[in-house]
Image (tube, rainbow, N blue to C red; front, side, top):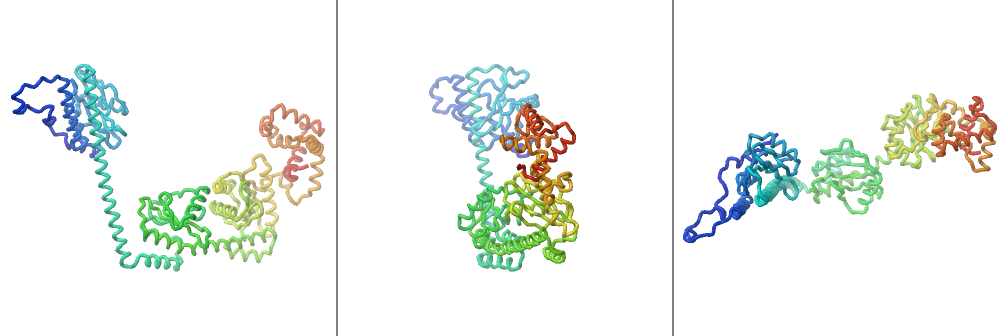
Length: 593
């Protein structure tokens, strides 16, 4: 549908009649000329003069609709032509001129749109020749001129038509450029007036109260009131009129006041976040990064968070910078206090969990758990988390705690040298915690072991061993990564810590001793081959693929295993004992001889 703007573009001059102004091409002879005989003009010369006069008028026309009307009205100056239709490209659409002929309008409209910006032939009954000619500027298509002829044009007439089309397109380019300039100038004027009015209001407030003293007093009051991050961003937004936000040092949003808050807030990129922190830390005062004015909250040099204003129009002035700096100064003690509280809470959690894992008296444990807001009277599970690319430091422990909270797990937390331990008040979902940690860490190379339910505090040390056992079984399985529950281990539950290792070693030596010795002497992998064969359920293709060997090589190795060990894989009893022995060898003894 054609919009009101498009119709207005044409109707403004659609009712004008008349032709070219009387210039050199169509000017009547003056008195001076009447007295002398002028040489007769040729038709071609006369056409060129008319086109020259038309060109001047086109560039003087007040708007695009008038330019197209003039071109259509004077198309006959270029030859035996008629203007069948004209179109202007307005707001992404081709808008037909009100002067278009209505007899074949639908067919012509359809054909012009099919051309999709290219020139091409147009068929009109009764006219042996017709073309749709694009009116092109340097950067875009301005419209179309559809021309028909009662006879096939000569080369000269086609050249004249091409000249008229070029001049019309050039005039449209100028008209469109003038329109954009006017619109841009009006918008810029409006924005400047709006900004001047807002700045005038702010300056009047500053003049009355003293801006710097006012900002300092406001932020001091906010900090003293204990309103926290929300109160500081709210005050900063009120002072500057810009959206204000606080992120932690990892780029996660803590508070936002003002419009246009992203939802959901984008997940931070750890590498880019570190680069941004280092870039801002090298500068004195707030730093502009894209559409944000950023300052670091870092009491005593330690970065605790980021305070920023979203300034997409680059309107921030010295008053804005002053307000941002005062807000950062007020925010620093608040974040430092929260960090200290978190560290104290984490330390209390760790001490309690460490004692629970080692064994402690119930009365003390219940009292301490109540002090940190955790109910130990419920049934609990011990969860052990290990990620291959992350050291089990404070940062990773916080990541695990954050992920557990995100999936609704209430827990106490501590860490060991290579893993993090949670005492959770509910059985974790089979995949939720693992998926949350995969998103947090950016990698899926992690393993989680979960104990059986623990109904008394005295059971926790034993349940901790169960969780470790579940984790170790998962790590030595074909699928190294994911979550494993101890109560789903089946046979592997009896192969855990606390069993008689001497008996297990004797059992392994009885069934695998000859293969282990052979592997040691010949640097072979017979035991590993047998273990993979059982892991793959006896499937030759899967086993060969997992070992990256050919099927025939696998068949040879299995025959050698029969010959060396003297055991028959087809015998049910031998097969069961060999499978258990390979699992004990791999899981309990760590794959060593």
